[in-house]
Image (cartoon, rainbow, N blue to C red; front, side, top):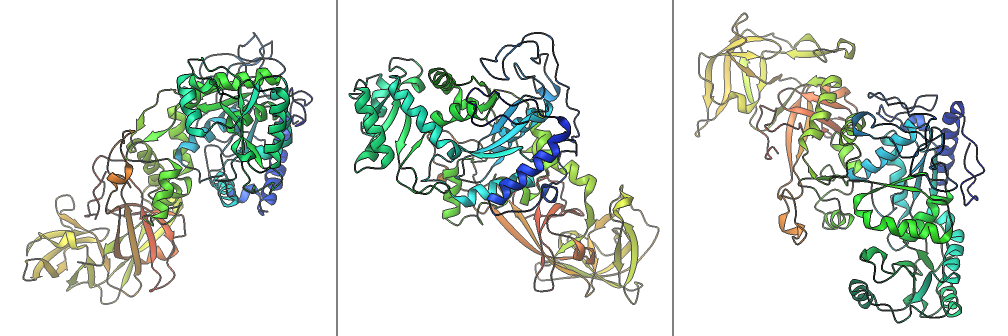
Length: 626
């Protein structure tokens, strides 16, 4: 059951039946993806995730969702004509699991939430929190999630951004019940704007922008505030038609210039803009602001709970004022804290600067906090949503540390990742074993020490092996060493260069030695079966932990923020697929960015941050561990 979109009061649609949710979701997903030129089914894009949906439309999750309280007692926060109203059906009760409180006035089966990204950039980690909260509550209350593209500013929006957001949702395992656009409602929004003018709640203004800002700051009425309704309507129509000079005009709400809340001081609701719209073309020459469109479309689409970051707190009275003056259905507004991280910029403008300056490889660069960038760096949806649930619905704004975020990723990778070995090509030291096998031989070992179901790997042994350069330095002749995963050996002779660095080793295998006390070597059999490897590690893009408002991020650019190591990998790396995370022994977890295709096309691996104060890697890296 869906609410009729034409119903301003949100009535007319009955409760959806649980058994029909999955089928309806698939239909809507396919229909909306087809509009964007995509035809794939959601199951093809649904990785394991805290928010993955089972066939009955409920979430599959590692965290048990609290059941919503059913009938019994009136809840606050509803309002007229909507499912958020109190009454006997209203859900009530204490906080849910993980700091996720009950929604005020929520009714099981009738909760409708929305995630409204603007198609002017790529989704980042901050958006992921809003997505998680809206999807969490829609599923917890067996309700509905709408993804609505807020396409009200054609000057900034591109179709490629919209397509990337749809793709990111699929990668995160989130399947909305419906995809809509604010532009779907432009005729209704325009009608409501005319109503605002006719009712004396809005006026047209051509005050220059800087003057308007100063007047709003000082509480000074615009010279146009008391123009006649007839003149205002004519100017509004001229603006809509894009008549010469009309783009200098805007529509402002008459909320009151003496209000101590500056967001209520006659804000702009409509602006002229002749830029062609990605969806509607040149049909419109003026567009509503987000502040005007949002409360209207929320009411029209049957949203029961609108969740926004605390930066919109001062605009909540504005949101309610618009709904009250237009007589549309009341929507409950809830605020949560924005997700900020240390050493990280989330501003689209600032991120775009890095792209334009070619300091990164586009919006999917592993150093970027975008969903695409973080997935590429090794983020898992499971750990992401666990982390977000632990943050809960807090309103306290803090700069989060990355350690907890990445340590959760590492725990999941540790459970699922195959093991392999890679040795840095530069400085690798040959170790000739006089009693080693004349021809390469294989030792069978588990691909994962605790997960036999992940299969086995073959460790090749030979009379000549390559030892990690760092491990060879500091060895002495006659020293016993552990050739990891094979046996103990004795170093009989060392060759060194003029600087005293070991360049070659000679010795013999000596089984039965002291595994616990002897130095362990990372190594590979020196055979033609080894693969070329490119290891990439990344640092933060900015070097300052937290930027102050007056500081320019360009003064704190980390250089370098990327380092590459050419390495030699064991033959097991030939089977690693793009997107798979593996553990390179003594180096850490790496995500495969490009699989091995041949000697001239190495496997490209990206180091996944470990979330530790001190690196778990015992092999020297090229960037500082943070």
